Length: 128
Image 1 (cartoon, rainbow, N blue to C red):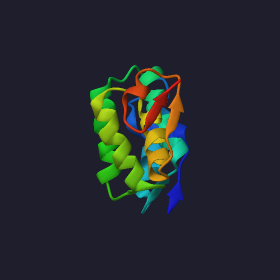
Image 2 (image 1 turned 180 degrees about the vertical axis):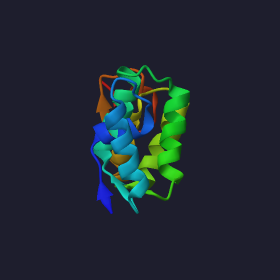
Image 3 (image 1 turned 90 degrees about the horizontal axis):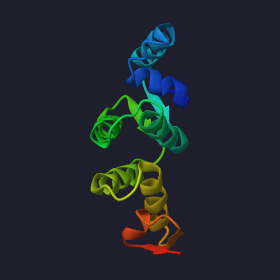
């Protein structure tokens, strides 16, 4: 098993014409790896980069996240909260990072306090 950083995962996902060599290297690496481990930080950073840098819409982000979840080549740090965060993200009230934060808090039965009005719409949150 290998682990990859966000910049490698993004190159696997995006056809980056500005970095064709890095894209090929990243895709070859993942294709030849038996398993690829993705930490939660990489999961969150990847969605942020795709949304902010590459202007990826939420429907495409959902497709990417679902692919990472079901593709047996990817080993997610915490697959259960990842799946639950995808389900929350699908509702459209918060970005994926906030959904994962809420999911992880909920797994500990902790109420999540936030100033984020969109995130505060979810149960188990308290808007400050």
